[in-house]
Length: 111
Image (tube, rainbow, N blue to C red; front, side, top):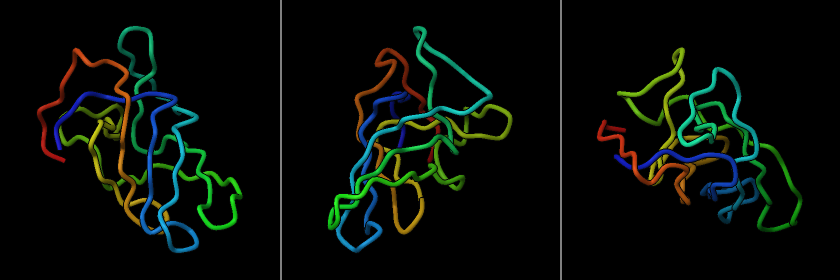
């Protein structure tokens, strides 16, 4: 799904979550190599999310899966992650909610 890129602090969900119901979280770490817009590091596949188990409340890390994101914008083989992307990650499908890091940029490439 084409959309603006996201960065640290972007809200995400994964469904099903670790214990069944959807889990929520945020992007916490963008790993190198870096690409930035407006001084913000843009998330790519492999970036780490801090998730919260919806049943137990326990936090856990979850990397954004490598089989998703932009097919047009990549950085050393890692795809740009955009608002609205649905990426297989961990136990289910991670949905990238937002807010966007650079709302003035829209990647029109296919997911």
